[in-house]
Length: 405
Image 1 (cartoon, rainbow, N blue to C red):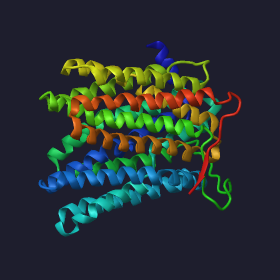
Image 2 (tube, rainbow, N blue to C red):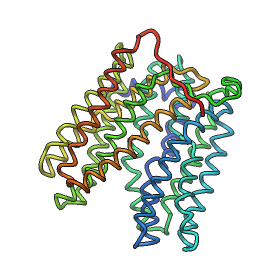
Image 3 (tube, rainbow, N blue to C red):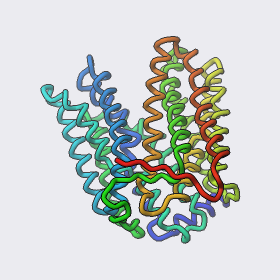
Image 4 (spheres, helix red, strand yellow):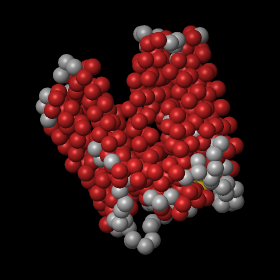
């Protein structure tokens, strides 16, 4: 315990450190709440077609965030966090308010889906902003990876409590209340993290007249993180479906809890370590641990066995993302760091959407029990991409990958 406190006390002792952590957690609310919030709001407004409308809105939100996120990150790199984070948060909040309003007026319900997409397209990614903030602190932080681990801890805390908060607000408030509350928290977070010290300097002339997304960590990392997202998206759907197939649909809550809880514990422990192993090698090892840990979830029979297997599969989730973000922070220059973090988030988001869709088709075709087997090739692809990339990457010169928007 003393070692854990010592590891995290360095980043938290920095000027602005506690502010980054606190407002970074608050501003992450939409990441954990909005997809479920769109479904809950639509289902309450229209019991007959609500789930279909809400699911389409959640998909529009997720894909828009994944597609436009890197461009927003590039804008932030060029213009600075202070002006853009707040303006974008205001626009996203306004779009969310219109989306909720469309549910209260039946003639405007068709606008709910495109407005959800607009929220995703304009919402600033708070996690990318805070990770860039920590990277700016640089040499002043005794263990910079512990600072990045704090961000993964915030991610896990958000996903641990976000869905539960949505369920509570949906049951005690008006239609769309979880959406509005999450956007209010986004606004508070955006204002908070741009009100402290050590804001990354804008780089208006870093890319000339074109929009270039520089990703020195390499396309192999994107493929691996995308495949990991596919496994995670499939697992989320399969956990609910398998519990329902066992006649215990409410039992999925415990499965989600232990999976996220194990990931949170993994983040706390791994983030407190001081490493001598190169960060890319650590990422590969973490991905291998995840791929191996997923195997029991695909093979065990019975509810309690599945709970234990889900705990094992969760241990390496956050540590893997910690290493991927640490790699991006290490090899990316300041003028494109925010966009690089956002590209990584987008790769994961696209993978999650793909994995969830594949799992849904598999469940419909062969049932939840057999459909769990798709976790094996998805996790295997993620580990294989990490191993191949690690094997062919020179230690002294990381590969570069860029694209033009």
